[in-house]
Image 1: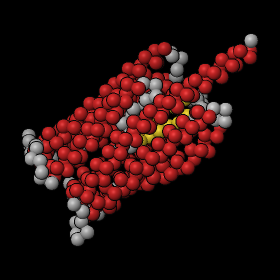
Image 2 (image 1 turned 135 degrees about the vertical axis):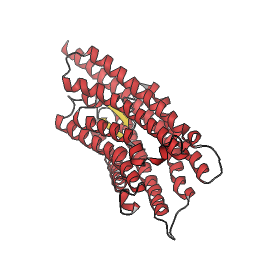
Image 3 (image 1 turned 180 degrees about the horizontal axis):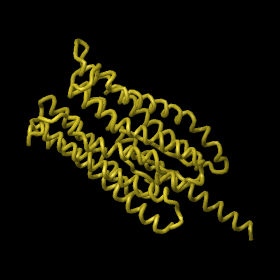
Image 4 (image 1 turned 60 degrees about the vertical axis):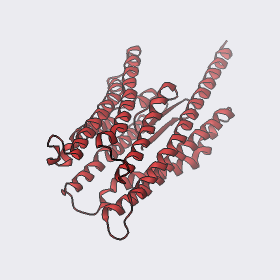
Length: 339
């Protein structure tokens, strides 16, 4: 689970998670596929736990079925983003080439990325079921669709302004937007391209070293998420001080930032627990962990996400509506004074 929240204080709110669901406050219809996608992830973790513990005797295609449902949910979100960006660009013909490319290519590459992930899962199921001679190929080769799509998507994220940055380019310095895009693209590459590459090369015996070092990108990302959660949670009251004239907006902003911090902190802590137990299991020895010990933190994590994520989305929507009302009141007051 990878969550990113971009807050443009006092003007607008853009919320985006690792699966690319942007502008949730503007479009509440996106909430059902987002929640459904994470719910299907939870179902998959439970099913694979029962499969590995030999409680269920399902084939691997049935085990991976919830994940394909997740891909459908988030591909739907990306399709909506592409259509929305295209219609917005048609109304704003004065935008630059970079803006137009960023508005279309980022969600389009995200859609292709989810399609590539779905194809890779099909190849992985064929590998596990030993169908079509796929098992004779190394896993690194089977993951080629992911490498190509994620690397391309990460490059686009680093180079082009995202739709959220494009809409808020006048509210913040351009250098901050470029830095944000570079960091987001780099993290995207580390989590969705480099980390799986290290795992598959280790399984194929192309990479030496222990499993603790193989998961170095994951350890780094979890540490960054933990630091971000602490920073966001502790700076929420300070950031909200500028809203001196709007108590409601200030309260909603603090609530939204606290929920963002809580979600990120939860992902980091339970991610550490999962990764620690997984490395113990893969390294073997006396201090090994069971399959249940490995997957229970993931089940708890997704269960908590199912509670916190709707709260965060609703808080974002309420903050967005409150800031919009404040802007409209300020514009009306300014117009009245000019008269």
